Length: 322
Length: 251
Image (cartoon, rainbow over all chains, first blue to last red; front, side, top):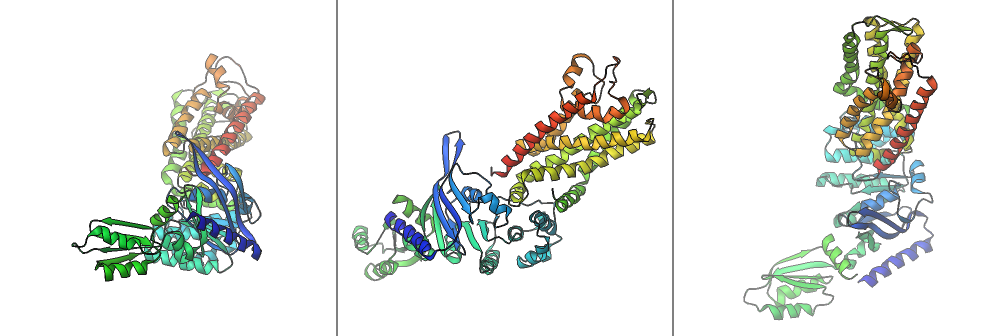
């Protein structure tokens, strides 16, 4: 498993280099160590990453994987303990000052007692782009909220406002740290629709998420990170293989002896894991069709469920093989 | 420094009516109280009278508390993550500090004006009109030092209570800075090293020409007062910049 992951990473990198794709973001051996009461803690334990111009990349990992710390370093909000970061050939802070990188921060806040328009105006003034205020407010659909206090805006509305702030400098590289956290499904889709239109304008986008679904729907490439390291890096479509396939589960008939049934299931190709809970057996692997057929036809199982891999299973699969 | 940002920030502060009332009315109330406490407020002192002395002292105290409180709001902003938002713009920490100081000084100029107007209406007297202008100008400009102090204290401890503590600390600085009661002896020797001593001494300078209000007839040179002020500007500015940078990292 880990070998395949490595190969993916390498082949992808070679491809990039052969295309001569200009790099929007480069991380080389980046580490961030925090001092804690229990001794030093590596929030980011050595990340190498290269994002080409125009790519949409998902930065996928569970909470505490080091996503936000990495993003903070890309934006120059935190200095790495070791390693190099370059954004469009500049240091992160230079890129921020040039308006070439911008972000929707997860914990980055808004002032509750400003109106939406005041907030946009204040940040626009700092970027020296007051002429872009109306365009950006229209594009992010917050014109109707202009006179509303930030404290009276819903979570989704505040997120659109933060997105507007990020678009003000017309950045080449846009970073989104869990941009849809706290949104309902409709708001989530509306947000990503806007995002996709925007990305077409030649922007490079890197977004952090802990929803596998979001990575699958919106990113061509996914970087899976955990415990401060890159666990897998490749096209999102191959993520399923990287992460160990689907889970097929069904109820075995009560009279059926369990052990021979499990042995039969074990003969299926590419099975990664089989386990039982009472009469329910779960088979994990990429060959879900074969598992389903065997369960229904040969074993007479009922109540079949097939589920796509969750981040948790993906994560377990990748960390167990390391 | 960014004019639009300062304007929006001023609008925002002006909506916080309670805070503003406190900043403007408290020093007026203190002047009225202290100005009449000593009974002989109309007695001649320096180039004016005792009431003028008390008026300048209270205006200096009030404007310093106002700048501390206004600049301390940077702590609340940092807690809301606004500092990180600002860190994604070309504005540098020094620019953020400068904007806060200007906003704080606009509020302190209103606070000092209220005290000076009350003083003019209730018998504060100076020999020449320019003494009023000079005292007022020094009070407002000098109060900027305490914006640095408020920001440093607020951001370093990063909590609502920090702002309260910073403002309360001003009472301590004011007492040991020779602002409320004329000090003498050892207390006066200590006072010369505290943050408000140079500021209030300079604000009173047009009136007193450095002479102290105790009975010793001693006086401070303006050089000593300036040295005190400049030293504290450097200390507070260094702390404020350090605190702003630190607050931009995620906690």
